[in-house]
Length: 326
Image (cartoon, rainbow, N blue to C red; front, top):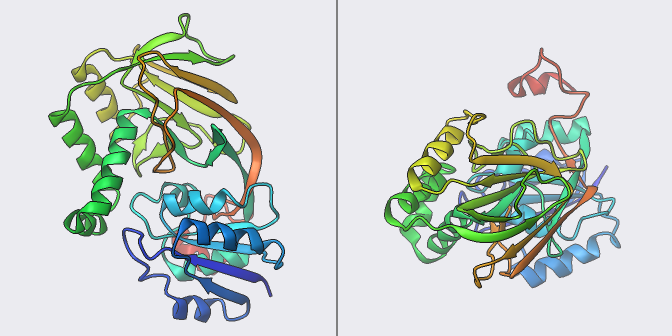
């Protein structure tokens, strides 16, 4: 029997229809399971800080990538394992871990006891687990977050079309907004750039291959190798940038694009050169603005439940057939 705390986020875009308390207790009846519904970030943090003292072994976080980000801040370097119950828009992290919102499959993955420790990327002291960056992608994330909070109609649309929300907002930004580039001083011991002073519409920092559900930005990047990927877009006009990003959205990485720079590292420094603070997003959340971003990595800092554990991975099994493995 395991001691489990479940954190439900009633504000997630798809709601919690798949993860209500009654269903959770039915599937995990053999375990000591407690459901918690914190009403603020402060209440969430205070509750999470007590989990180790109370002997909690697992935290289940029901919500989207933002919920995962908030919960994971307090679980780094702890013995508590994190299980994601995806109920957000893109659910990038859950997708990377092979998790769906099917509670039966979640239960079977939990029973299989497959976990892995992943790296945490730190941006000015705040952690993220998936992808983030500055520029266009940050503007898209900020727009989605703002409209979700201010427009009930937009929030209803998000529940219907899910991760396609980001594609639609990106298209709107590209068609309706000015093509803005940031002047940035970029430092990294692994950077292939000859001149650290660059003009860029977007820089992405990646701990996994996909962002926004289907946007392939960092092929072969993995989240437990002690490195993160940096992808720099140097396109000086809207059309070239659009061609590059549309290929990524189609799952076709533009390997021959000379304006696309990609490298792996464990440290990165970004400094604004245009007198405007840098706005960074990570795990879909907007981080505090700063003139300088110090980005590093803590190796294998968070233990997570995953379908992609070695004991379950083989070419003969699909996620739909996981119920056959007990």
